[in-house]
Length: 316
Image 1 (cartoon, one colour):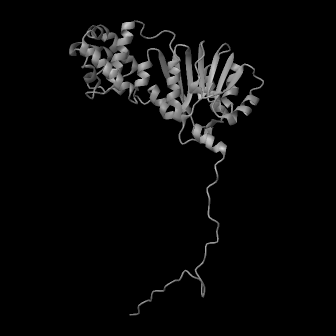
Image 2: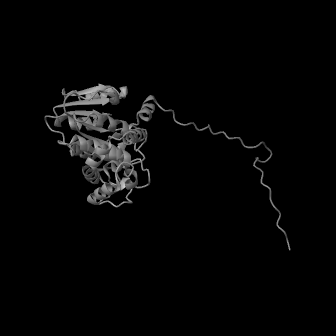
Image 3: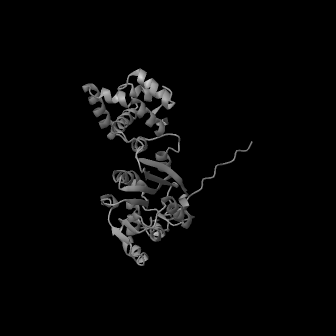
């Protein structure tokens, strides 16, 4: 039987040296100063007119309103908001965008373009509404700024990362500490989704329109009830014991707590994230006298102080 011989192939041409790579080495395109600014500021400009119109509709500006815009960018949203309000203050941190932005809005003297980091600005001294397509990486800071501005802030309509908007509005069926904590004074609502293709550069994820509305009248008007609500929420979101009942049992007698849970329609094994803001309100109303009466004890006071410190230092 014949056996085939292995043929050895040389990488060198006949009678010569190995081939040399004559192609020029590939180099990554140089980033311009504008590219670096976009990355530094997390800029994804809203370019789709339909998406701009949806944000404006969600904001519901009125002819007598003072609006503050965070992150004017190239002015697409600014230009749409301008004819619908009494005064518009638009903040933009990127100095490269300021000249064109001011030129674009030159015919709207009631619009003031401010070259400044929005987060370093003080809120107006009169009632105002906040609107903006916010950098995803700074969303939490901007929302915190808005909440600190209540009650002068009447509403905040923010185009954020879709996941953030859904999480804060309870769209997943779960509720966050930030939302529950502020619920008696502020309503959180998801007003729609914006496809990632509506932005340039195109981000990795879709956007969501999140609206915060200051309530004309807080849901809890009694100071004692407001204080108890805040303490119960802080304690509940520690998650100690695994269930909300176990967490609140640290400061509430079992019988009173069971009665409050029944009134709120909650089971003893419910996890804190699945308790709606409305159920928290019922718990606070049912437990106000009990918790307020127990605050006189040194142990209860110390526990509440420790809980607040722990929750404030968390990322819930």
